[in-house]
Figure 1 (cartoon, rainbow, N blue to C red):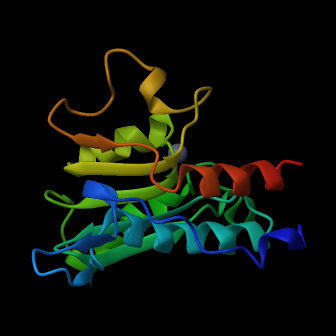
Figure 2 (figure 1 turned 180 degrees about the horizontal axis):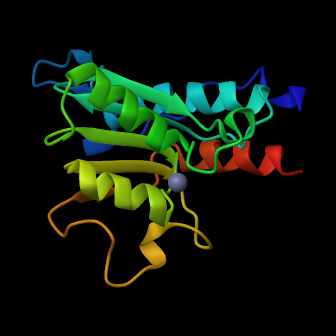
Amino acid sequence: MTSLLPKKPPTIARGRSGAISQNTVGIVEFDIYSDAHFMRKAYSLALQAYHEGEVPVGAVVVGHNRIIGSGYNQVERLADITAHAEIMAITAATQFLGAKYLVDCTLYVTLEPCAMCAGALHWAQLGRVVFGARDPKKGFLRYQPPVLLSKVEIVPGIMETECATLLREFFL
Ligand SMILES: [Zn+2]
């Protein structure tokens, strides 16, 4: 289990979800508001869950390029099957805002949300969902018709390898 600690930094993707770009005068810019940046935050929360003996999933809610809620899986500690990372992050974000809807916000989560969490994302009206590892067995994408509203932008596969490796190591 200690093999996860000295990891090399995740590979930085490019394009919409990337972190590095080069402008017209050749100066390399670092985009701190990239999907990769916020997924790294979610991944650090998944690592925290891992070290606490929880299934390693982490999530952050971002509004206007700012993290307004975060959480990680705490099903074992709270003995609560609804304590998934997404639910914790959504609850933290709505408490922070003092409002029940998260319109124009993005949820970053290291694992494809389950149907329960996708339902919560639906009710909270998040506009965008970015996830790392895919979950063909329990993920919401297997359900038809889709749980999320059709206008929601879904971005899969950000830091997919790192997120999936962490889960695999947990279940070894
Ligand atoms: Zn869930």
